[in-house]
Image (tube, rainbow, N blue to C red; front, side, top):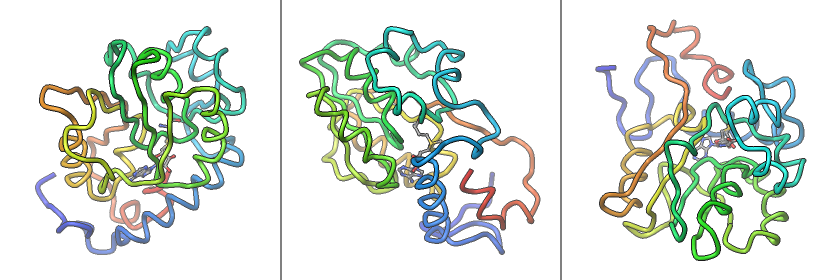
Length: 208
Ligand SMILES: C[S@@+](CC[C@H](N)C(=O)[O-])C[C@H]1O[C@@H](n2cnc3c(N)ncnc32)[C@H](O)[C@@H]1O
């Protein structure tokens, strides 16, 4: 798209501000943390993960209530090719399925941090993290990550970047926290058609 918003602002007249979008996203995902059913036009939970190729052994090692709250749009692991000992960041980790899978693949010398804008999404995975000593969770947003430059070998995101109002800022941050030569693997939704003004003005459309 050629029309660029100023940082923190939205491109189209009538588009909600970045702050109101974030509030709407937080409110929606607070509801999703309570019960993910009925919020998405695509499948969620264990059935979706299996359909996307997540291995049964991975899913069985993770508490059921977290697997049930998987709302990602793809399976980043075939492309991510995680090696033992790697430092991994999952941006917009939700209830943490990808964090725990990555922790398993990175092994005891690796580390995985999940960050999410919505504190309610992190409550359950934080409790589960007691059983996964190399996994941890922080409330933060993709556009302003609380890590020094070059902190990670790999950044994952699954169904998140489409929700970021300021995508340039998010990509800058993902690049900044990756070490030189590090990898970004993102599963996401990409809109290629023009979006009607009425949809651009809809908080609901932006936060789904
Ligand atoms: C579709 S869910 C995907 C959750 C998780 N990746 C998964 O696969 O189940 C999107 C997640 O991104 C979070 N999110 C949205 N915008 C964000 C942002 N700017 N920074 C960090 N997290 C964000 C939401 O709170 C929500 O938990």
